[in-house]
Length: 242
Image (cartoon, rainbow, N blue to C red; front, side, top):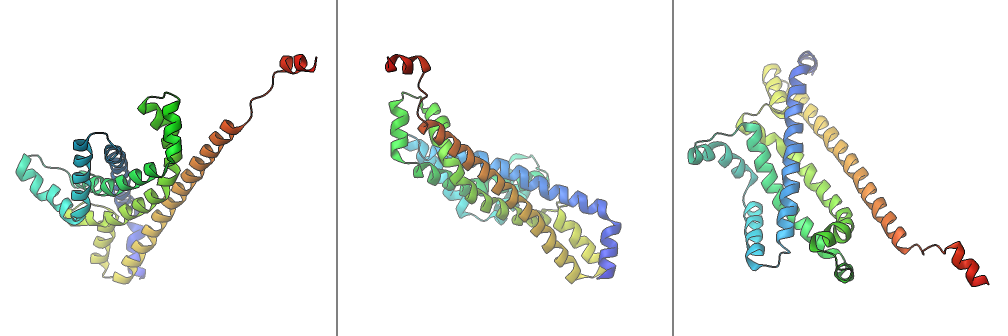
């Protein structure tokens, strides 16, 4: 193992570069997945059957096809169809985004459906527009329910980034794999990858847990402000005493 770790620390710039690619694929893929999750989730509750049907077809297609195949199609087949070649990192971001966005849309749809019907009716009674109802009443209650499931999907997305190695992206797995090939130390190389991915996943979990606590605290604060009785004006109180 000494040979591997000596080589590892001598080539830390390569490790940082691979780590940067892994984090970029994770963060950008998660951002695209979040956008698609809300888009398809909202469309699933649309008034028009065509909109709901389009959302369902897209979600079922991207959930029902392999991420492995999607990644290979973008990297090898997409240039043949469009004459435009995507970089390995961009292929990974798009593949991760559409795949996990499809899964995330079910999280969004389920959280929106979990908001009590009375809340929707109260927002309508207040004469709020559909956008205002969603932004001010529904989403603040649904968002905290989405975060735990989004956390699981984010960790799964991170664990899928080693697939970038298959399309020649210089991610963390690729860099450590090359070090393993040069030193012949398989046990040390894969143990290092296990530890590194665990640290990354645990860090993301802590960040998402903090986000969930903040969202729930904000929701609790809103509810307390709504239920707090209105203060009695001193003038009114004095008049009543008289």
